[in-house]
Image (cartoon, rainbow, N blue to C red; front, side):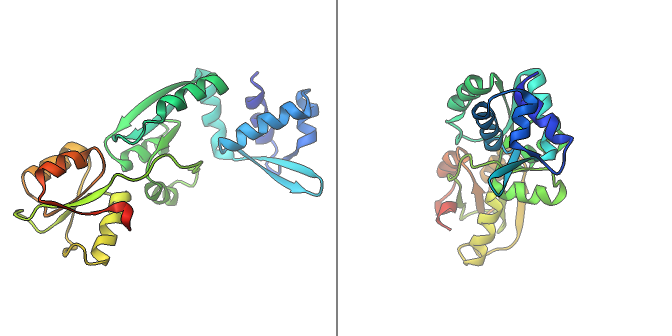
Length: 240
């Protein structure tokens, strides 16, 4: 059995944790090798260690046990991402995943941050890259979500279409764009609170082309199209 999976199985049976020294004896591996395995599991957000005196108690993050087992059984990590151009590092990540964990990477693209995060809750994917604001909203509904680390940032902006047929602002829901929209209203950068939410990039472009919203809050690469459609870029979301 894979040693990391064995560690997680042992810890899952001991909710109060297991001394690190006990794990080494149980698995019949050296303390240095165990430390390397535990460090990897910590980086993946699967376990944590509590120091008591001169020893460590190792505890598991319970919600990830079934996911970890599923991933290792099929030797593949299913990663959900939002349709974007901000993930140039994924090629390097795939190579690292293969080298360190002998896992293949399968990328599944979703049209919005909300749909990406919902896919994780439903168990369609093992992990996701989505805006932290979306994950925090989702955490309120599903406490099993764990934020492991950062992925990408930047690229979103607000555009104005002056001769629009509506004074609304269009944005994706429960996302970084939604926070950007709220900040722009609060700072009087845009002068409307009437909001229309789109659910995928094509819908956002249709709204802009048909001039059904005065303000568009979008991310890259949709911003490239909005530069041609809109009259001006009001503000970059990263400026808030």
